[in-house]
Image 1 (cartoon, rainbow, N blue to C red):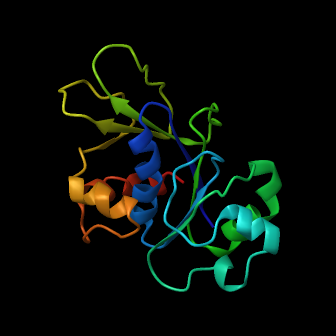
Image 2 (image 1 turned 90 degrees about the vertical axis):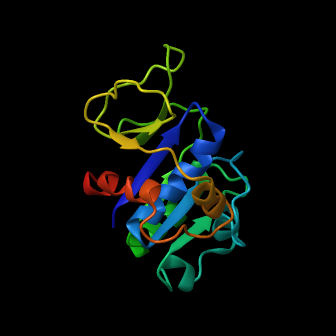
Length: 180
């Protein structure tokens, strides 16, 4: 089953919403936050809970179409490896949100904001996603470019609901899955 890790350095909101957009583009997916200090995503069961009590059969596979979110709950990646393997094996698509403080593995989807100047250099790579921010700037070659999201798109994703079908920002994430 495809699993993609995703990382963003520059923008806290983009770092929180990008994994949700990538998951929504898949149709049915699980988002797992691997950042011990990550956002307070909606979700009643954290990764720490799954590790401490063991996942149920229902938690190991989707029961409906859509996106399911597993907040971190304060657990280190090394302590959750077995549960993560089981989740990846059972879900059709899994998005693993990496902490922004660490450097991402080369296989990670890197999300960067396209801003003027050289404050945030954008590395070239095969899994590069660039969030347009309103300036007319040259896009790095070979990247997926996201249009500016609508406010209701971001609001829906951050409150645990999916945007309307056909949302242009979510749709722009689809090519990332094609490269998986």
